[in-house]
Length: 95
Image 1 (cartoon, rainbow, N blue to C red):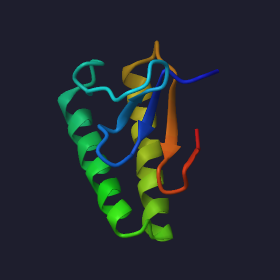
Image 2 (image 1 turned 30 degrees about the vertical axis):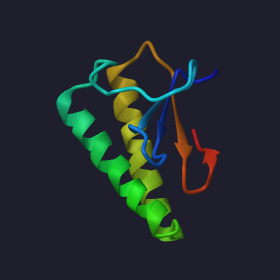
Image 3 (image 1 turned 45 degrees about the vertical axis):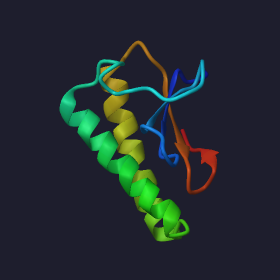
Image 4 (image 1 turned 30 degrees about the horizontal axis):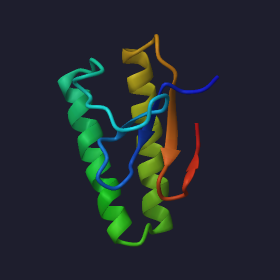
């Protein structure tokens, strides 16, 4: 099943990509609670820093693990959506 939303740490993104129409989504726009929105923003900021550090493998692994946890949280908040994950450091979908 194709995802509706991708958790995505791309540089200058929001952490949430519209997998159907393209572009990035705001967490409040899709109805995520403020705490989860803040966690996504913090994770995405760390992924931006990893980009500028050259994507050290150990850091990317840690960020992807954190991102997959965020995926689970988003999926539980938006049960009518299919949520996937794109690893910016590995440049591939992981879930």
